[in-house]
Image (cartoon, rainbow, N blue to C red; front, side):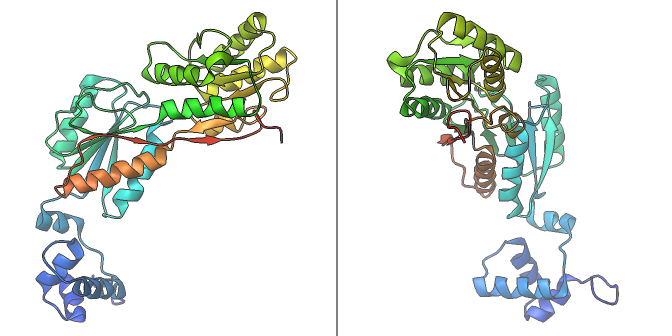
Length: 331
């Protein structure tokens, strides 16, 4: 906006940069075959004048809406919000906005959102959720990237986290601390994440695993119950790795109620690095960070590439990271 209150026009930017209005428009929209110095000169002129491009006009001239849809099944936002934050960081570089749609695990609601997003002419869609089970592909007319919750179609672009590596790393951590009687407590046996994490933990523990994996729900209550069961069956237990932070926090409470010190008597590790649980646990939890924001950022980058005509089909696995806190290593 000019000091007089009259909006700055593209012709004003063009005049200051010494180019035509058409060239200025192409430079600001990232279109056309222009030299880098020309684009930079136009952008400097736009910044100097305080020029703000009209998004409607920009879309009409480029054939794009500069918006992206994000469809999630994660009503609580535990997984989708970090993914969205990462995606926004990447998409913001392309001056694109994100429209969040919560399908609540309802296929009809998901189809409604898909129709709505396509009617709004979004440039692409990111699909995510709270579970890691591969899901049916979205029948969309625009590029789609699946983040955390992969597509069943191997030709689609999917991003997943290395859950097996994370679970194995947590077990190796307690073994490196000298623990030799290790249990694994986790969630429902029919969940993909449960199976992947439990199998990897069992392989890493080897002969140190004290018994079969204990399955329950994703709750602190189950963690407390599991701690009681473990101590009755294996009183010499000295480490427990868990399939989630909620379960691990419950295990810590159950062990403390039974007179066992964490980590002096029994080391406990969680999974997910959900800070509202992990940091509030007594003691704070050693846990596996899923890197969801980095996953979302990569999803945004891949979607931008796909929108530009360079898709990356196939599944990419991103690393997890072990965060060591006082539940395994005394302060």
